[in-house]
Amino acid sequence: MNGLRAVVVCLVLACAAVVSPAAADAPPTAGRPGWSDVAVPAAPPPVTASDIAARGPSEVWATAYEHASDGLRPLLYRWDGSAWSRDSTFPGAGEPGWIREVEFVGEEMWALHNRAGEGEILRRTAAGKWSAVPLPQTLWTYQDFTAVPGAAWVVGEDSTGLKVLHYDSSGWTTQSTPEGVLYLMGITARTADDVWAWASTTTGTTVLHWDGTAWRDAKVPLPSNSNVHTILLEPSGRATLGGSQYTDGVARTYLMTWNGSAWRTTYPPLGDTYTEGMVRGPDGALWLPLRSDRAFQSKYARVDGTRVTYSYGPNRTNAIAVKPRALARVGSSLLAFGTVEIYGSKPNLMSEKRGG
Image (cartoon, rainbow, N blue to C red; front, side, top):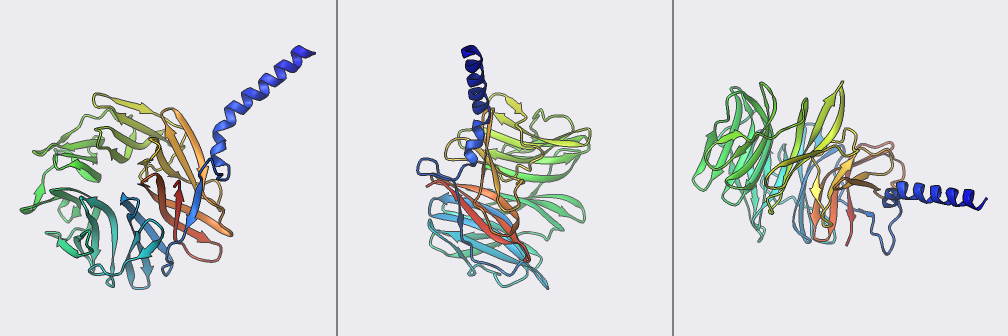
């Protein structure tokens, strides 16, 4: 009998060890910080959240746009370390258009802005002075934007096809891509001569690299029948690529990491999660928003090597969809920006914070 009791105890302990990752779902305590709601000034709904970027704990910018009766209207928000506020001082704030990708270039904030149909890069100095750099031509679609000290890129299409617009101290130029590239789905840069883009080509999805001289195939060994959602570049030289692989019509998320000499592919249990909002958290792990299985709470995944744990945002009364769009590391915490839809209303902005 004692032997049977010992076996039962061992089985209980083993089961507890298996389900222990769910502890991340527990409410925040003094020893375990959780996600908390952060108020965002409301805009006329429906609203779409776009992007978020942080320079430090007391300067974060987030972009969005409202769907007005006569078209889109750009929205811009700033986090000062304690609260979100809306900024309406930028050029074209009251005009039709949108603001999407936002990045910090040194101490300046840069953002891609469509102003009444014309593309430009908004720039704001640390002293709060605004300026705009008009694009050299109007594009039919503006696919993505990235900037680093000394350079910026805007990719999209016009009536003639793919366009890669490059900006430096001398002005704008148009760059060519390898033969067979149909369009670029995204672009990101670490420096002016270390830029990565993911492209659709005549042979499938390909990763391209700009080395300061030309765009070339980076020879990344992507999984078969896959696409790329994002590439996360870090100052250390590490890179993390996220995407989906399709097998028998079913998508599953994959991650690829570059350690400076080789790519390593993993398939964490993330379903068909879109990885565009992925960031490196203050704890060294990867964090990304997920499609939540709870209508009244957001959901996040923490990926640390082969270990994946999950956490939920705060309960939101009568919510039918809580959708964090983007994450940013803000000092020792994470800040999420997205939308929430309450029963009987249209989507409006939401923000959640984890950690101190």
